[in-house]
Image 1 (cartoon, helix red, strand yellow):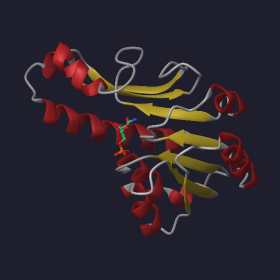
Image 2 (cartoon, helix red, strand yellow):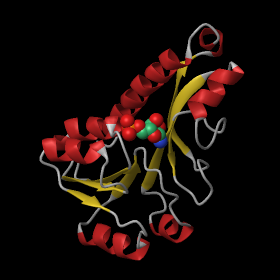
Image 3 (cartoon, rainbow, N blue to C red):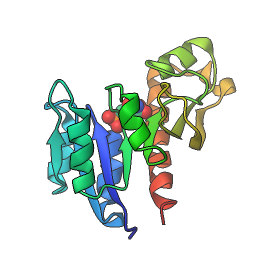
Image 4 (cartoon, rainbow, N blue to C red):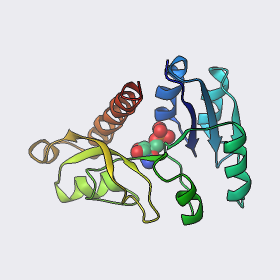
Length: 180
Ligand code: GRF
């Protein structure tokens, strides 16, 4: 077990959150924060007996920061969190805030990264990186290819998306494993 108190921020499906939940014994504590009251990730958290919190529509980032501090959170992992995190919050969590992105950064920053890489016939992959104020721009922590440029041209988008999500789950597991 690591001595880490981890917060995982989600907005939806939460398949990457599921990897954290399945590893919950690896953490001193896990706290799930969702920007969406309907997120399936909240059901996943409750199925694992992990506490969660739903953010209001207009997020009070200072209040959130204080709630994280009061729980002694050490690191935050953004796993499909669809809100832009303001620079003031990013600065407070510098070096302790991570994001998962479905591309081989610095290629294909932003939304619909898999779709755009597939349409261009470019390699598709997954990156875990430090969060800085600019979107998808911080130092890379872990990165791996999911579908090579050679393979992508012969695959339909659905298959590429499926392979990329499976690779995301692997990379999240690798990130958890390297915390010890
Ligand atoms: C993942 O593709 C992640 O890389 C992106 O949002 C998606 C979240 O998927 N940032 P899930 O909610 O973890 O299933």
